[in-house]
Image (cartoon, rainbow, N blue to C red):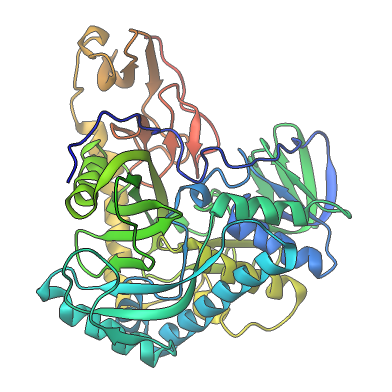
Length: 504
């Protein structure tokens, strides 16, 4: 292997966001009346919007930042019905019928996405590839065999093979052919272009601040209101404080790198390991993409070592010339390992939600949009009941209780911890500290040039105290996954308001 050269790393943008062709769209200015308002300009929101437009509805999509700039632009961009060991888990937690519903919906999601690419002529580099779940260690072989059986019984055309096309020894793998990989930002840009026009619009830099469930519903934004017969909340993590989603969804972060190779080629297949640490591998052209290193948001485990471990893995097995990109993503996971898709809460007939994609959002968000479009149009959908937010899973009740207990511990525990520094002068350049602030505490970040930012630690969503993420230089909420810049600006919901600023 060649020695590691000095590299320039883009930590602010993912491979998919870097130099992707973008169309800047208008902000909402004034009031608007449509049939359906969709909150969120990622795969879930834009897919639902396009399906509803095709049904004849007028649709307004409201995106707080830019289309595809959220989790859609920070994934590994695999579109697969084979997803690590999900079928073994679903069968154990929810039974065989739930696993079969998830398999059928996932296959449909993959094919619906591929069909949109063809129908709308979207230039997103779609390629058909095989997906693999492999055993990195001999001890993981049984997990691979169990997943093979569970996936097959759920209806997937899987097979057990010796190994994917990886340059290191593995101990067997499950293979599902004819899956898809894409450039996700180019894909959603294509969806947005198809939604725009003929009475439907996509608005950017337009953050939804709240929703009133009147008849019609009213979506409140800083620069106008949107009235709609139906509202879909596709904001990745549900941001409205109703439906008790904070007690059922656990936000998790994971990391990716892209590498240029000095020699050889990256693998053709889309592979992911069955055990821990997870290593997810795919290619994009001649670039190698490696993902993994997941952990709970705000857990204190976010640090630059996450990226370094992925880089070390890549250099161990490939002739890496340079690391071109580093990025991360956040995904909420439901307590019973199934997405939530349907009425926002019991009794809702106008307000809809989708979330909990378990890091497989390109396929899952697509089938979620299919379910919601059917429900709004009054059509039956074969998977709707399996993913209804009102479902109850007795087998996963202990995990539900655990999420509730974690929230209580995070809410109270951080308030009892002493500050890390008594004065702002104790904050080193390029780092952050929790600093004494009268009788309370504040978060202080010092830039390398000495500039200081001081913010309240109280998350503006539901009041948990945020923690510093050293890998990405952000303040992250351990309770529900809201993320804020060092200046307090909202990076990721469910929070919609910035952290209060403090005197530095």
